[in-house]
Image (cartoon, rainbow, N blue to C red; front, side):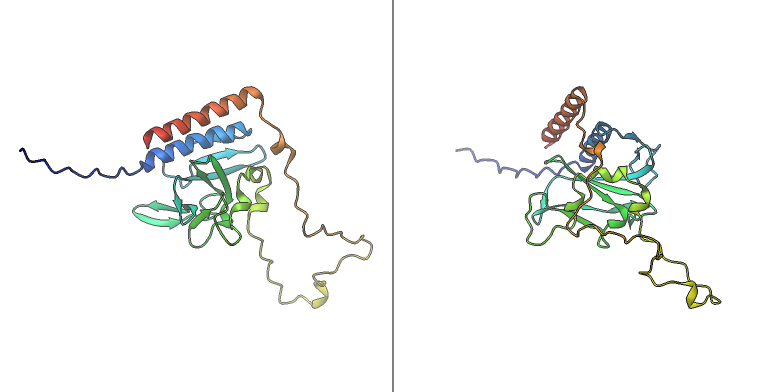
Length: 226
């Protein structure tokens, strides 16, 4: 009886991270353009951002990161880059926004660069698999942040030091206000500002069909490469 040849265990196929990144960038262009933004790609790959997004009133440097698998009940991306074989952490000097894309769920997180954690690890919980309050859920599909001025995304400015010759009378108390001015009404703590009207408008039917076709194409390429 002939002896059987030993079977070689099938090697596990690792995901092509470069191809996944390309799919995420293609999806970002379609998504942003469908929302009315103009998107440009910088020449070469020497910059630390992937795209320039033109919102009309301002332009923003955008880095796109994607993830396709669960890690400890969440989807995780890293706000790091590799420059000359050295890793660094994105800061406001490098980018204005980090956009995280969860490819299997077709979900986006628009995170301002000044909200990036010191640990450089962003974990998203779109399915609520977490016992505490998810840190980045406030940025899920937060495309309206591109429509607000850049000043609202920057860190609070530090007041200039007082002159040594200044007297206390030159600096009124922090809570003081002119006597002739009416009292400032504070909004309720639970009130949340409404989204801009432009974010509520739906895309035209022709554009909606194009966006759907592109989304289906990206999903098909993603499923085929797996």
